[in-house]
Length: 466
Image 1 (tube, rainbow, N blue to C red):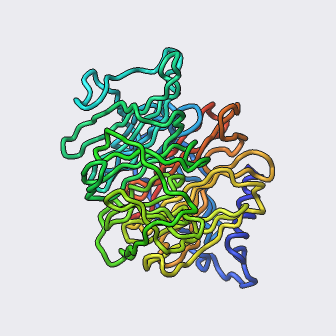
Image 2 (spheres, one colour; image 1 turned 90 degrees about the vertical axis):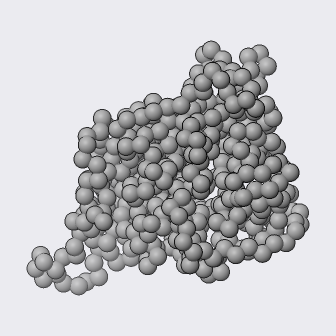
Image 3 (cartoon, rainbow, N blue to C red; image 1 turned 90 degrees about the horizontal axis):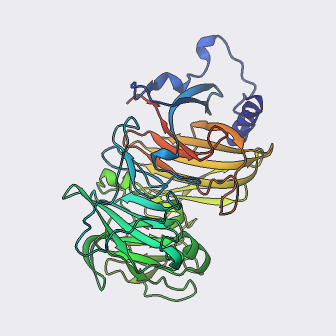
């Protein structure tokens, strides 16, 4: 704990120069800066099975306190190595770190899971379970589309018996019919791996068919190593291969208005963020944008005909997200520094804030971010290799980001006493960061420490009073 406190104060001094005082005298206790904790309240007074207190630092006053979070293990949707977390507009917590979606509608008090029924959709194949002894190896992705549907997939590695065929199951929650549907897709990559998934805002009219939206899924393995394309669907059930353009190629030029700050965007734009490794964000007027895609720095744009275009807009990072205010958040990682860029005029101009962690970290291992327009909130989650050895999980909150990008609080999630590495073959694995924000502003975040053999996730319980 002492080492953690020391690291915490060192980090504070690094983030906010002079925050330990600038030689000004303090006269009387009533002149001390007011702690922000005075505005916080316990948002959920119903007890959780595993509440834990995590140390939080007020970066404006240097005061620390313990904040309560509800903690959940791999039985609530995870697997050996990760959680894939998301939230919905109605306040559900979604997790498909494992084989099937698991969710809670009440901040984690009760959990439900979906399993495929005996009768699939008529257009789909018969359900085939995983091989005996391979249960629990599946993994997927999930996100709520801007019409309320929930699109997800699950990948079962080598579930084809002796054939060792990967199996890709599309799983859809149809909001209009209020029911789950599923489909076994045979047309997939030979080695799929954990997926990243995102909505292409419609209406879609394409050679793949028509729909309110399209769902694009890419393989972590193929997408990162070979830019080999992905799978596209206009109904969330039946997927077909789609090729990505070469990064050195030239595509038809397109102009896209990215300034939505004067528009009224609904709250779906605060929950439909894909995982950062999708490296894309949906556009409210229709389509999907990939920042810094081409070798010349231009963006790629998948339009509502599901055709590729080139957009001559230079983003500060390939990792970007648009929230319900029309604000575009991008985060760039360089060494032991992460820089948050914000544009409120459609990527014309940017302000920024840098999180320099070089004094406490020997390396940044995993990270994720999200903006929430309703609460004027930006959250950054970092898992870093500490200079002292173990990995440390932290969460920064920046409230009122539209006025100031400097973080308000720093929370240490978990004990920070476990060294883990992503990738198959490692004994202790934490493969990627995962983060989501509930409609009430509460954070849901994955972490890993010595209290469990598998990664955990935590749900924030103390929030500022509205």
